[in-house]
Length: 159
Image (cartoon, rainbow, N blue to C red; front, side, top):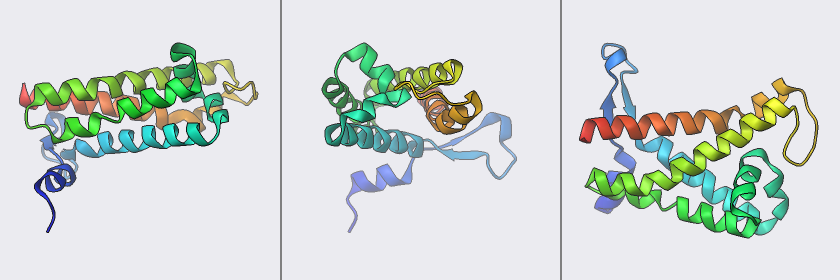
């Protein structure tokens, strides 16, 4: 038997996209992008514990520049993963407060990726063509954008 909290988490919140109400893709599960971001941040945090060279990747280096040390970034990423609790909240206002820190981390990481693209170099100094870095870092940028859209849409539906 699956617990209620797991059913709510996996079921996701189905929203209708106004721009595409008639198309088959007019319904989106908001929670999947949040779950993806949680898993991404947990992976980064665990990898930082295993090897501090992860701090040389563009999204993590942008966080390290603000927070200071790779260990502090790892703690920040674990805290941002508390968004999982926000998914389980019935009250959108409290859930939104728990999703906010993860959004800040995602946006800052995306800015690190954009910086690497514009500098034609990874954070650890490895030079590459901008298109190479863009192809590599695009998922980080897209995740930040989709997460922001999902939280905004969720707020509009519950606000």
